[in-house]
Amino acid sequence: MSLKKIITIIGARPQIIKAAALSRAIREAYADQLTELIVHTGQHYDENMSDVFFTELEIPKPAFNLNVGSGSHAVMTAKMMEGLESIFLSEKPDAVLVYGDTNSTLAAAMAAAKIHIPVIHVEAGLRSFNKAMPEELNRIACDHMSSLLFSPTKAGLENLKNEGFDLTPSKKAQINHPNIYHCGDIMFDNSLYFSDLSEEKSSVLEEHGLQKNQFILCTIHRDSNTDDIRNINAIFRALLEIQSETNLDILLPIHPRTKQKMEELLDRTLLEKITHSKGIKIIPPTGFLDIISLEKNAKLIITDSGGVQKEAYFFKKPCVILREQTEWIEIVENGNARLTGANEKLIVQHTMELLAKSDFSYPELFGNGQAAKFICAKILEDLLC
Ligand code: UD1
Ligand code: UDP
Image (cartoon, rainbow, N blue to C red; front, side, top):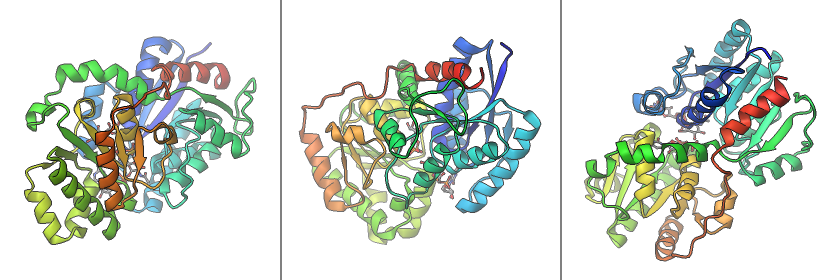
């Protein structure tokens, strides 16, 4: 079989991290059959939101960076589509691979599908059932433009079935009859793979004076939390209350969007209290090895991140999810995480309850850490055969 070429699209922080797993699988087991070109849309561009991951996770440097930067949804998506179409036409890949549900995902899927380049969607089928989330629109549209869909969970597979997809694979996957697989989560592959390296290399606990199991890790970036004046104030009031009630440190690696919105929208007295609180430590976004160390050593995690709520489960930590719904419903149903939205009372109440609880179970919900190799095998067998 001749060497097949795929273009992988990345843009936002979690996609860069996800790319590490697939690039590693290609390098280790499929280098004689698959070649991968990485294209960065430039959706995330700060050093600590992008470059840091290429170095520490050994991800091949992008062959192209569109440098689209920030903007409204339409502006970003349009700029990305224009740049990507031109690269697809000149590079002539056999397929385009996209991750997740960001504007970069949607732009790439749409640009490729319309010029008949097959799309591979990794993290397919996930639904929050809340179309007010930009990500929900991106996911649904992308799934329906793809030829090969990989769902990390069984719930994802069910969602696709309910949307009318036929789950029986055909001999050759194509847009009008895509092949769909439940394959586990490539982020679980990554968390297992980088866990030991994180122990060896990360000194983040010492840098911030944190004791194992004596702090809460928190991340916030969802637009419904950061851009809504009531919600952002309620979340920070809850953090202040939790810190004073528990006396645990709260470490908050801050997403650039949240940093801006705190300045803009937080009540001045609350902002003062947060800024001067000894127990609430706000730090720049960390690299992946550091965040793994923080996740492994935290007592509890409070987050609105899709990735971080799952990683809480991977590292067996209870999690308060600052959202009304989650695509990762299994971890809520299994009792490991609680949904609170931006409700101050619920955030405090569920944090206290989870801190007091000890009977957690962690069944294997996200595969066996080999999702990336499975994905490569199916790309070759079903799509590029
Ligand atoms: C995006 C994704 C979201 C994903 C998140 C991961 C969409 C619609 N949203 O949200 O699904 O969970 O990435 O982190 O695609 N900014 C910087 N520097 C950067 C990047 C962003 O300052 O390197 C600031 C800019 O002010 C920008 C804002 O953050 O306007 C939001 O960035 P954007 O990429 O639009 O959305 P995210 O909230 O990061
Ligand atoms: N992450 C990181 N440094 C941070 C915060 C998060 O490396 O300071 C990692 C995190 O471990 C996870 C991914 O970024 O793998 C999640 O990205 P994010 O929360 O930005 O987006 P989401 O997963 O919600 O789309």
